[in-house]
Image (cartoon, rainbow, N blue to C red; front, side):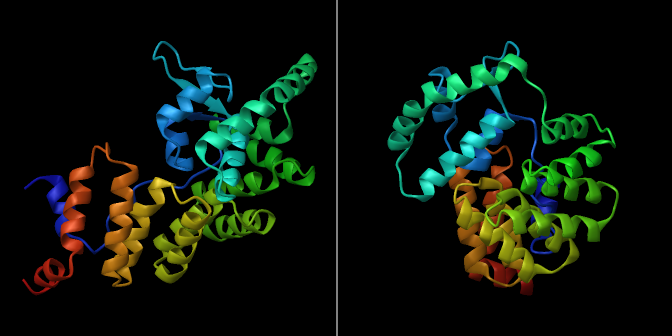
Length: 271
């Protein structure tokens, strides 16, 4: 019996979550942008090659990485999609803003200094404990406050301070109620603590803000199963499959879907 089958046969007892806690980073891959914002990799690369969104070539792979400034632009794309704009309309809007944006960037880059938040991001990725100090400084300066609180929550988690993590994720949402990563992290925190109703609440909030955030649907399915909502679990897993058809573990998802069916699930429990 393979490891995957063992994992499936234990369902719906604890199954590993699809992704760990999400912090705001200084660099994102094309795949990570796709997962967070539900944009096709083809669209992301096309916008990059057209200069609509600035990306940095990733070595000799022909791919790109995106910094925090680009992430801010992708969040603007998310808001435009929420307003009902199509991808074509968004692209036209971004192209219209491109010249003005470039002019502003060129002026800033004459004497570019890192903000406290940007400094914190770099220190965080190096594992430097001083990152917390710079996040606190960023919060005091009003510099990406929700993001800073979100990442402070991750640091508290890494030290085992769950109460501190909860407080920081909550503060992140207080400053930005639509902060997807904070909702997702709170959901994971509640899931790990066994509080499945609150985990469901924040996973569902994340899907409302970003309906194409693929990773959340896998974890949402696990929560639905823990709450005996077989239909919800099936719908969430199907949505995950739609967004991540090339997932290497798609066979596992297929098995989970099979056991999500009421008849098979009943047989599994009584057999």
